[in-house]
Image 1 (cartoon, rainbow, N blue to C red):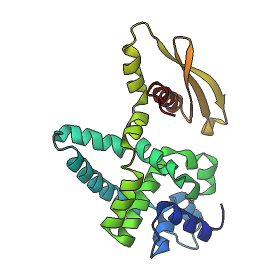
Image 2 (image 1 turned 120 degrees about the vertical axis):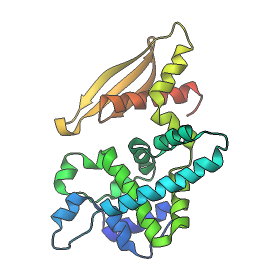
Image 3 (image 1 turned 135 degrees about the horizontal axis):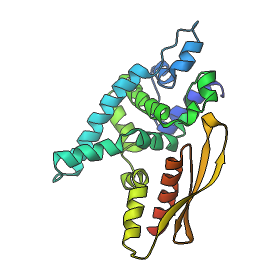
Image 4 (image 1 turned 180 degrees about the vertical axis):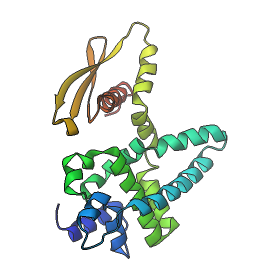
Length: 232
């Protein structure tokens, strides 16, 4: 990884927030595997900040949905919030700012593909929210969440539920058949990469890649949906 000081400055420029206490940001990016390797420095990992950020994110997203959907019942609000802040959704948001490239991982975790794992990337996203909250207060945390989590919701929901939504679109065409075909599999067992193609009858409509077949199918369905809806 590049010089840590430079990396922290670069990330702060990307998110549009500059920390008064930069150590909070470094902690938010530090996985327990890295902290355990650096025993002399006694580094704190991101887990406590993640706990705090999760609560801040739930509050801000709840207020947003409450204000934006005046007639939506509680049960539907709860389901919508859950889909917006679930692990894949947060990892998707985090990758928009390449947050995974800034995470401090131990050598073992790095070797087993931790930098690509949704569970770690989403945890770090919440930890960054917690760090911003501690450093700049709720208004700064809300600004970050509004910009990087609650923006482009239509597109994000499309991504998260693309296989279901694509199936619903296909069902409108009575004679059309949707199928997914595994066309590639690369990498060692601990870090597989799958490639999938989606076909409508015999026409290729989407291509996807992911660390699981399901993730690759989801990506292929997302690409297909965007084409069907006339998006680039």
